[in-house]
View 1: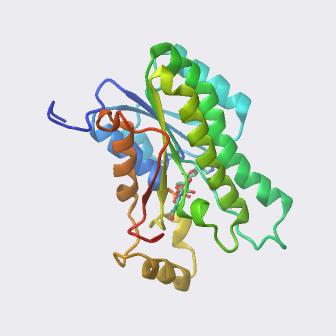
View 2 (view 1 turned 90 degrees about the horizontal axis):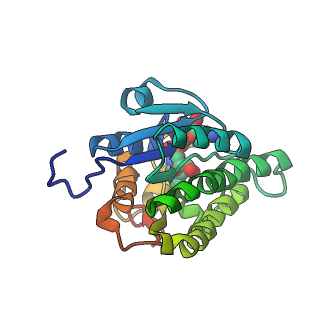
Length: 244
Ligand SMILES: NC(=O)c1ccc[n+]([C@@H]2O[C@H](COP(=O)([O-])OP(=O)(O)OC[C@H]3O[C@@H](n4cnc5c(N)ncnc54)[C@H](O)[C@@H]3O)[C@@H](O)[C@H]2O)c1
């Protein structure tokens, strides 16, 4: 990208979780396109991620200790994060009266605690360098609740509180923290939903269509970039008007 690129991320390192496919992969591609070095984290590798990332690490984001070890090694080896995108998330849907304890815990551990783990192990380095931008992937359903998704909505609502609290704590160190709240997006997470559910979500939007992963990564890129240098503690929807 040329010097006239308003979203230029040249010289910056972006850590992105859940980067092997879907929204995380779109973020990895977007950051790379705008000049950043991408470190992609996921449970599993993908050829698509390998094609764009400078580094990849395969780790369960819910594992506090392992995330700490990997973060330490990356920072030591010159890959300290300027940007952190906490994107990894899972669903384990059931109505609350049938939900298994393991399904509640798994969703909270990955989608909420996973973000805490990466924030906890990134902030010291960002504080030292006096800069950083963190983007947490929440959801329309963390804002409004959703039938059959009490675990997921609790995790995503938790991310809103995490975003605002950490933003308050780290603003004075030049670190910004924001959250993105997508409506339904065309990815593997939603592809297997019944056609009626997908149609209902489309009908809820004002634009009559679902988001693509790029629709979401464009907002993540904007929030992470210097163009958004005075935006922090915000939750911004990208949902085609689905929540209006
Ligand atoms: N797809 C949607 O409609 C939608 C809507 C709102 C929010 N979101 C959120 O966006 C994020 C990405 O969603 P997506 O649709 O791209 O999902 P996806 O299932 O297509 O991709 C998720 C990625 O995260 C990885 N991952 C899962 N658990 C992990 C773990 N424990 N450790 C490391 N990596 C792990 C997966 O391997 C996968 O590569 C999620 O947080 C999701 O909740 C998605």
